[in-house]
Amino acid sequence: MRALILAVALVACTQPAPTLEAAPEAGAQDALAAMPSWDGARAAGVDFRAIGQEPGWMLDIYQRDQIKLIWDYGENSTTFPLAAANTAREGVTSYATQADGRTLAVTIQRTPCQDAMSGETYPATVEVVIDGRALNGCGMSV
Image (cartoon, helix red, strand yellow):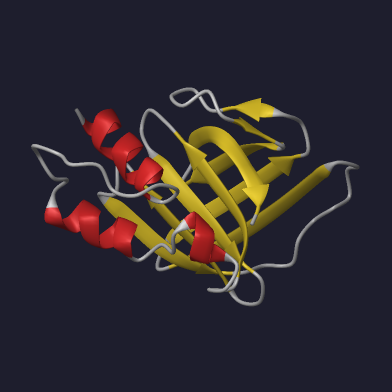
C-alpha cells in the first residue's frame, strides 16, 4: 500500500493528480508537498532530483545550499546543508553531509537507470545512505 501511495505521489509531480479512493497520511502528504513538482523544481532552485522505491524516497539537491530527502514513503524527511561535491572519480559525483544528528551520503553515477516501478529511464544511478541505511534509485538534472 505504501509503495502505491508513493508511486501516486511521484507521478503527481509530473502529471495532473489522479482521483484516489484513499489519500496518503497527513505527514507524508506534507513532506511530499514540501518538494517542488518536476516542472517547478528548476525554478525552486533544484539542480538534481533522485527517486527510489521500496521504500519510496525522493532527494533534491539545490544549486546553492541544501539537500532535501524524504524517505519511508514520506514518513521521514530532513534537510541537510549542501557539502562540496566530490568528483574524484570520473562519472561519479558524491556528497557527504550531516544535520540534526543524521548523516547522509549521496553517490550519483552517470550510468543509465530504470525506475523499478514506472519503467522510466534516467541518466543517473543514485545511492543514498541515510544513517547507514542504503536506498537505491535513479536521478537526473532538472
